[in-house]
View 1: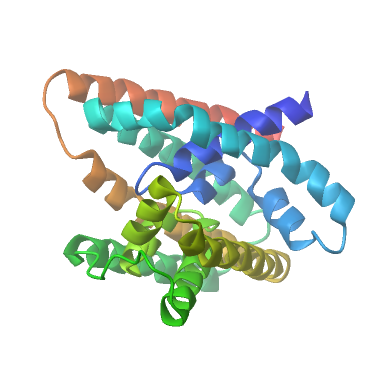
View 2: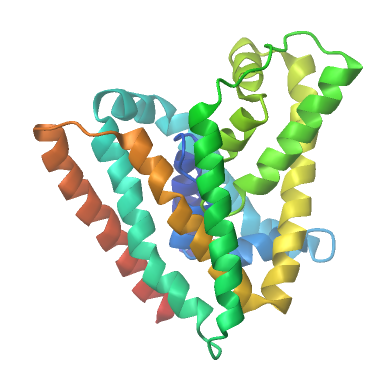
Length: 273
């Protein structure tokens, strides 16, 4: 049963990763698997068997989410842009009490507000840069040493950010100028271009997970407040992506907002019990 539950939770994380502006890391927090997920990735070499057993169903779910729901999400984002984005906003808003509860398990320290404001400011700057950016870099279709290094580094940074709650990996890749090139390479199956991207993603995920795991163990409260800042900062880009459509779309958005928040609050209570 636990195996199946993790597949479902991984599926939600996978679906989130294909929605612009929505963070798979945030959904992992909402699903209550973030801490163990980061720990399992970080301890993969040290405790290979148990890490794989934990990560396998989540990975299966994530792949299923991307493969099975990509066309559905594309349809929903095209025809029901506002309700779809607002549903994920509801999930995020509903998860905030759970994350705050975890953050203050120990006595609250005023210094913990600093990482909150820093991470919130980072999200605001990234949102501003995304809105003024034209993703102004040439499309990479042929691999050279320079383009390979650039793609590898861009993918590594984007992947490390992707596992951080609140930050959309696709948004970071866009800011670094590699999003269009990677998307084009995937659609055309340009394997030479995808190789340095895949290597960069692996480096970014494992390095990022190790850093986050260390922070969780040494500075738990400050790390959770940083996560709260990232999540709070992700609200604006989701609202910008949602836009505003009067009429039926607005009514549906109220319903999806309540549904998303209710699901997150329910899962948060389940996690605390």
